[in-house]
Image (tube, rainbow, N blue to C red; front, top):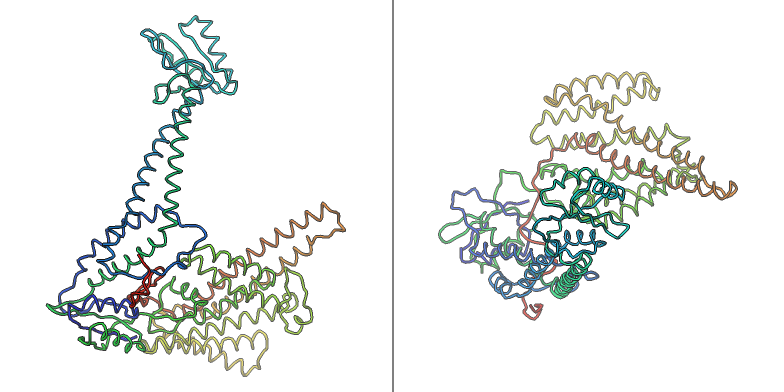
Length: 627
């Protein structure tokens, strides 16, 4: 990465900003020069206000189904002033807001009908004209009861006590409601509580005539309101089908112009010039200078700066591998002055996952399952990128399943498996050895990376990484010779002496990191979990097959039962093995491996520019899509 400084005339501001945005290779930074700070362009506020207004209008529309706006576009980009003028004349936005306002009014009217409709429905079995319930001496209240017994008990009390009260019940056998007529000075509420009666408000608007008549009128009014809402929805749908793509293009233009208008805030200025600084990939510095020269008509000054600050991290990777970078950056962005941690992650994670799943059937299912998850999730989100890594790792699971002769726990390729030696039942020691060797290799590679990263700044600590490598290798030889007689006594003794010396040297050289020395022993052994989880998955699959493989000789009912159990148990075992494979594979990389060299805390390279979907920049007006 190369830091550059560009000085140009203030009246060339718009041209240079457009050129920098168009080329999209300069990560802009605020200059440290003791000059005045620049300001956002005058039309920044107007653009921001219009963005809010347009975004609100788009949010009120539904994306047309079965259409891809990208195929109808791109639309030619227009600059800020003309864009504001065109949007100010765009009556569609006003119409969308007007329709939404009317829809809200109708929806509010519908909500106001809900309670009167419920009251009218509950009293619909009573044939009394509610408008006539007026008297100087009598009061009227409506109630609902939980069951018929409450109403019968109330009638008996009225009759027994000869109360000045009359009850008119609903004739609908499914509804337990009534209207009470009583003297105004009577305590009717205590009687209602005694029989668990719930009062119904008959003073609401829309409750006129008999309850059945009121219900009919309310339903007619509701139908009219719903027709109005449906009509608005149809018109909004028509607008969406006709204007949605164009509005998305306008929104993209607005956001680009807002970015251009606001970027001046990080510039420095004099009375007649502006100063722009930023980082550019060193290989593209000439391309940047050519673009600047063309935009300014040759009236500019561009200087390559010697920077004492950390350069931003530029990562260029094939699209299929970019999810691995996402996962690394999700923890912390790599520094530009350290080795790329994603490369060993890309290599090791699929291997670890494949070994721990190690079944062709599970690998195939996990491939399609992860592909489905990736399809339905946000491409910029964690779940999507995890699913992409999972999908690539499923291929490794298929490969190791083939090598280990596992097809949903069934053995099908006996001869090839015997030749390779990946037999989970006969070669457990071999697989454990392979797992630990993977651990030793990866930890040693991590320490080598750590030496390279530390050498320029902390040479003492860097040499501690080399003695750590010596400790791991010599210690492994000493343990293998002492416990398993893999080496002769002389070699074992010499390795033990070297290991002890390396341990002391590592503790002396590592300084504050000396406490990590114990991890040099535990971390390589931690890779034995690869064999452990892989064996657990294989054994469970084998037991499922042995116990529940369906057979018609057992009879139809047992065949159906065993088939269901076979599928469910294999599905559960597959989910567990995939989950453990993903979690443990990530753990081995991020904890056992990355801690040996990875610092992180870098700054991502974010060039000034935009990814266009709905618009394009054109020079020839014949190419422009008509607005």
